[in-house]
Every structure is written in C-alpha cells, then in structure tokens.
Amino acid sequence: MCMISDSARIFAAFIALALASFSVPAAADPADIDAAARGVVRVVLIDSSGDEVVPVTHGSGFAVAPNLIVTNAHVIREALLDDTLRIGIVPSEGDAGTFATPVSVSPRNDLALLQIADGSLRLPPLTIAGGVSGDMGEVSAIGYPMNVDLAQGLEISDIFRAQPPVKSRGFLSGQRPSRQFDTILHTAPIARGNSGGPLLDGCGRVLGVNSFGADSDGSDAEFYFAVSLRELLPFLRENNVETSVNALPCTSIDDLNAAERARFDAQRAEAQQRLETREAELREARANARLQAQIEVLEARDNAMAMAMVLLLITIGAGYAAAQFRQSERADVAGNAQHRTFAMIAAAIAGAALIAAVLVWITRPGFNEIDERVAVILGEAPSDDDNPNNPDIAAGPGDGTLICTLVPERSRITGARTDDIEFDWAANGCVNERTQYGMVGGEWTRIFVPSDEAAVSVSTYDPDTRTFRTDRYLLARAEMEAARAARRDYDPPACGVGDAQITLGEQQSALLALLPDRPNERLVYSCETKRAGVIGGEE
Image (cartoon, rainbow, N blue to C red; front, side, top):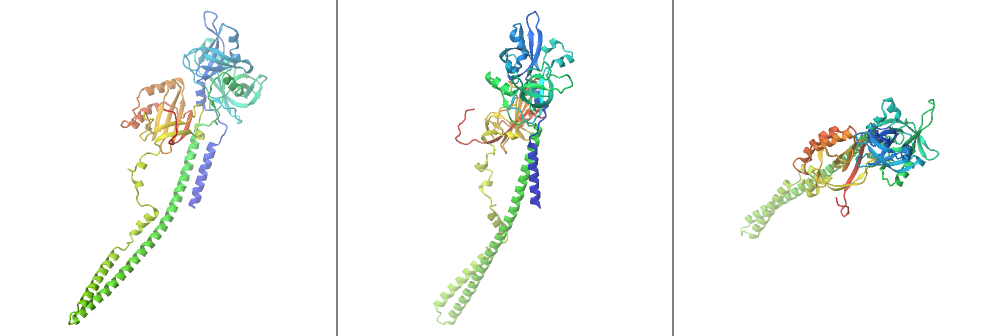
C-alpha cells in the first residue's frame, strides 16, 4: 500500500514537471519589452540649411551594437540625396541626443545601418531571435508613431526630447515575400513614424524591422509588414556586425519557477521513496542480522556451557582419583611415594580443570552481545570515516576549481552570453582567492553592478548541489543609476576577513531591495570539479 502511494506521488510530480516545461505560445513579458525599448531610438531628419535646426520628418530605429542602429532605408532616403539634411538620433531616455552617419543602405530590402557620430551615446543592443516559430504567438511593435505625437499635441520640435517609445501588441500572421524582399505579416498596430522600429517576440528579441502596413479603407482587417530575419541577418553579416542571436525557446520566469518547484517535488518524492525502500531493506537486513547474531551467541553459549560441564566432570574425576590415591597412600604402611605423586597430579588436574570451567562459564557470551554482533554484521561499527578530523572529508563538497556548464532547460536567456564558467571556490565563500560572496537568505550571493552595461547581475552558488546561478536585471537608466549609487555606498570585505560573508550579506540587502521582483534572465549552470591535468588559460 505504501509503495503504491509513493509511486503515485513520484508519477504525479513528474507529470507536473512535464506540464511546467511544456512549450506553449508565450505572451509578451512586459519586463522584456521594456528592456528592449531601452535600445529603441527616434531617427530624425534635420534641416540645417538655415539659422535654426528644424526637424523635417522622423522614423524609428534600434541598436544592434552600442553605436550602431538599424532602421528602414526609406526613413533616411531624403538625407542621402540632400546635403542640407542631417540624421539625428534621439534615445528613449536621458538627454544625450546626437547625430549619425549612414554605414550601409539597402533599398532593395528597405534596410539601413547607421553609426553614431561620436561617443556621447551608447545604447543597449537588442538581441536578435534565431527565427520565427510556428506557434503564431504574440508579438510587440515598438517605435514612434506620428499619430500618437499629434494626438498628444506635441509640436515638431518636441521630437528632440527623449520620450519612451510606443508599444503595441498583436500576433504573427505568417511569413510571405513581398515583390522585393521577405517579410513577416503581423497585427501589432504601427503607423508613420514606426518605420525602422523592431518587431519583438515575447522575450523581447527582434523578429523583424517594421516597414509598412496594408492599405485599408477602415472596414478591412489591419495587417502590417516587417522586414524578416532572412533579410536582416545577412545584411548585418555583410556589414561585419556581430549581433547577439538567441534561438532558445521563449520561457517565462514564472514557467521556470514552476518547473523548478516540480523538479524539486519530483526529486523529493524520489528521495523519499528511496529512503523508505532503504529503510525497509535495512529493517529486513537488521532482522536477519539479529537472527544470525542470536544463533551465533546461543551456539557460543551452549558450547561454552558444554565445555564448562566437561571441565567440571574432569574436575570431579581428577578429584576422585586424587582422593583414591591419598587413601591408598594411607593404607600402605610403607608409605608408597608413587601414590603420593599420583594424588598430587590428580589434584592439580582437578584444580586446573575447575579454574578452566569457571573461566569458560564466566566468559561465555552474554545476550547483550547480540546487538554488538548485529552492528558488526551490518557494518555499523565505528570507523575512521566517522572522524571529522579525517582529511579525506575535511573539504566541502563544492570546494576547489570548478567548471560550470549552462543547463538550458533550467535557464531563461534573452541575450546574455552562455559560455562555460571556471572559478575557484572556497568553503568560506571566497571566489578565485579575491572575491567574497555574502550569505543572503541561506545562499552564497554576490551582486555585480557594472559601469559599462545597463544590467545588474545577482550570482548565487550552492556548494551542496554545485549549482551556479545568475539572475540578470535589465534596468532603465534611472533604475541603473539608483543601483550604481547603492553599490557605491559600501565596500565589500576582503576574502575570509572575520564574518565577511555576514557583513557582505547585510551590505547587499539595500541593493537587492531596489531590484524588480523578477529578473529578465536566469542562467543556471551545473558545476563539476576540474579534472587534474586540464590546461586552461590563466585568470
């Protein structure tokens, strides 16, 4: 009955794990769309022929490198033929507007690549999707539609101010070639000014470059076209642009958390069944060992008692013989010395036999030896392995030089690098003998706030399971500045100094409180000890 219940519990846990990891069309995650929007810009054509700088028209674009922007060729077409027009770039946040110059223009597939003219503006690049999936899932268009500007009463000069782009949602409707290039058909509303902006999947990855809409008289369904990845990726490769391309399935953090809970429940159920099976086997083994020990002890006691009885009989016989020899000696008037000698020998034998009988009786196994013999039979006797000072067990399970490899099915990646990670781990939370990890919520944790990237990474390591995890938060400019300010408020303690892990854990708490509830990305790695003799680069 118990075994059936355990099997059912494990089966149910595995079913939950399978359902949690089952791929379904994912709705767009607002956090991912917001993160992608950081790299979307307004592309403005500016008339510089007069005394004042006057905007003429505008479109949208997005970063594929910190200083490179993709847009539509038709957005900048007039600037290519008129030297009085300049191309301005207005980011979605901050006040670092600047100019750009064309690197490559391809009217055939309506693509253009712009380079920011100086280093005053660096943008977070968007990740390119590996392809369009067949599930026809939800998509988002991001850009600067002119009708929204007009509806808000914005004047043409207002487009020089940084403003968040407009986001709209729809669904993929398929891929089809236009007369000149390959396109994606979708229903996410776009208008004039959206041209050159990105079409994103649910994880905020670029599926295409919005280009034009279908003509409609107001009664027909609205459809829109984006230049597909089949056009965009070759265009970028031709211009030697190295972009981040991610073809992994789009899984939400909630799905990952559900899968992790199901995996944990399945492991716990499996471990519980193994424990109960082991306990049942141990009970059976203990019963058999006790029976064997009882038989051995009873046999040893019976043998000892039989031996004591034999020795006692020898004692009685030898004593009787000694008495007879003494009596014969007294009866012999000549005082035969031989009888006296025999009497002494017999008496000695009787004494020795009596002492041996007593010793055998006293040293016979007691019933308390049954438990000791059970421990010996089961191998439960104390050994050197139980000594905590044994050098073979002094080191922790996760100590030493580790090689960590990404586990894709437990990860959510929208743009981060997924290379293997190598580091030295010490039991006191010291990495590579210089970077101290803090103890936060029972986990070894270190928060990294880079100065050259708009992302905060929270790395944790579990020595028991040898699991390394990095949660990445892709933050807006104001949030990033707040995180950097919180990071400047403390200096992490040096490795192994006093209660360094506790001190750092307390220092990092204020920074953790600033982060969103859920990360944008989660990278989970499985680590193993680096094999001896493996040659790697110096750190």
